Length: 241
Image (cartoon, rainbow, N blue to C red; front, side):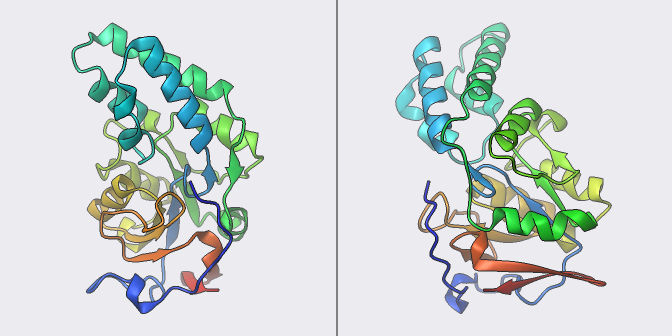
């Protein structure tokens, strides 16, 4: 996962033809993914899932396509242990959560993340919507002293995770915002698809994939240091740095 500090100004070529104008709209709120967007936990994820694969006899060569693209852990386990009974899948989920909560070495805040939250959180203009469970999200944010906003939606709060729209619909609802007037910030294709299905505008980051995620985001930039958020009486605007 890249943590490069270069922050090129968003170019017209970054926008999808016919997409929403992220730099021109006014938003009620901004909904942030966490891993790969606000923080990087790639090394921890790799260590923990490889260990889980060894312990539970999972095909570790199939882990990467799931583990780094914003898919809830329970869905990864269901895919990798399709023939296991419910008890074994539950045991695998409990184990990977235990491993990840205990392994926070190397987690870091990504460029621009702290500044974005500092601008938006005091006025209740943002939320975190993550595929992590509640305990894991708290452990990772705590490991880097990231001041998360009051509204956090985790995998424990929804029945269907990303790419289903439920997580972002719930995030907007808890903020009292119209999801169609929300901007979602994501690094993963599953998250972009979740946001688009919910009706939100999408700002994608190249923090995980140098080309940016799939899912047809409205605008792609290097990381959050490439933009700044401006809060006014009518809402939130996004400006290129």
